[in-house]
Image 1 (cartoon, rainbow, N blue to C red):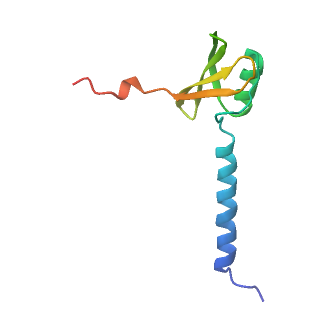
Image 2 (cartoon, rainbow, N blue to C red):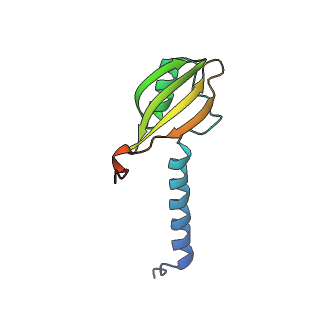
Length: 100
C-alpha cells in the first residue's frame, strides 16, 4: 500500500527549493568579495558567476567593471591592490525616465 503524499513531504520540497534559489542568489557579487587584481582575473571571476563583462577600466588605483546580469547593468569597483569589491552600483535605465 502506498503512503499518501503528506504536507511534511511538501514542506521538505519547498525548503529544498528555497535553499536552491538561495544558492543562485549567493552567486552574485557582494561588497568585500575578492575577485582578483588584474583585468583578466576580474573578468574571469565575474564571468564564472554569470555576469557579462562589457568593459573594465583602471582608474585611481581601482578597476571598474561595467557588467550585466539578468538584463540589469551595474558597475563593480574593485581595489587594484587587494582585489576586493569596494562598490556595487546599479545603472539607472535612462529610457524609463519621463521627459515631461
